[in-house]
Length: 450
Image 1 (cartoon, rainbow, N blue to C red):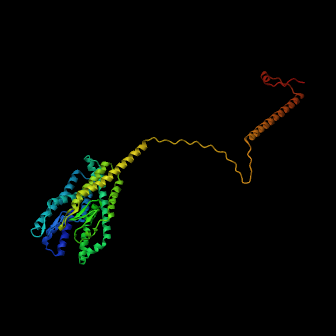
Image 2: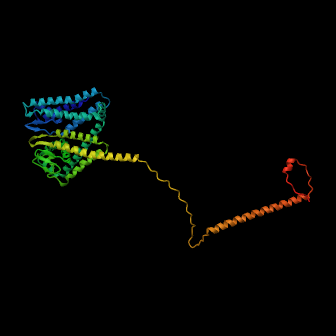
Image 3: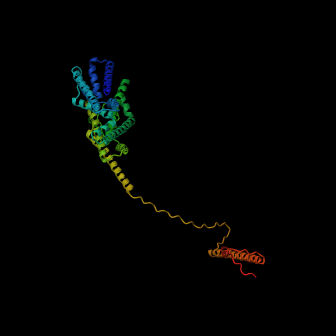
């Protein structure tokens, strides 16, 4: 399954080579050399023809090939895979393309006896093939499988997160660089018109546009190098944010993107670089060690990209970024901003823990306010005289005395009525009934008779 992309690419290369030879009416004896050259180009291996060495190959076909291989690898390992299966996949992904590269180099050496072509440098051929397919293997394994491997061999699992963060930073830099390329295309459209005027007919326009499209990722990488603060060289020409020194360049649309001088405000592009790093790192909470690991992975990937896009370009000389300066600046941007963010986050966590550990002082309970005496509402034009408190107390006392006098009078009248009733009873003949001793004690003595 994981070898299908390589077989598909080989078949596609054969079809393209055969079609090209038929269209250009070239002898079919050149078919093996053409197939070998196309395989080397898609693996970013330098090729030579007619005494001209082309060491900077278009990145777009290689990116498509890496995406195809990594996708097929991911499908193979996404469910369940053993260590033995993983070893078989690794050997197949790396050694089969390497064998095809060595076969292509041998075919170029053999074709050199008939045609003006030559074999590629063997060291670069092996190294670049392994790097291209190694990147495809690393991407295809995915974060879950990498974490499982790190856990199995006792390595920290956050290394997978650091690698994913590094890739996001590089992709954001590449996106910003691509936007810069489009801005330069619009701003320098007059130079594009001058370049296209050199070519006659539609075939020249189509061929130039196709080559420019294939090399568009290379242009974005050059712009990203400049945005980091480094330099990009095309032979004797150099490009940076601080100065642009140009020599005579071929009439190609991508070369026409380069302005004649460095604008004084171009230094502000460094802010874009720093903001991209800050944006990615703001979404993670890394420690200082994790941040430095992320910066190290960014540095390694920048070195790999610089190596794959540096080489001889015909008579112009060596073209590509200043690899060590670019990698060092990438580490400085990522590590500097990341360490600062990690320290600030650590300080914020410490303050939060201190605030959580401190006792919370409860606010004192508020005493209910005493109700204030409501003042009587005074209508406009009405005069209200307030009686003093002494008068109110005197009125209360007089009311009490009157109540007591009334109660005494009622008691006296009740007593008089009872006396009258007793006198009437004495005058009447009432039979005396003998009573017991207990009743006699409870009886009320009516007093002497008259």
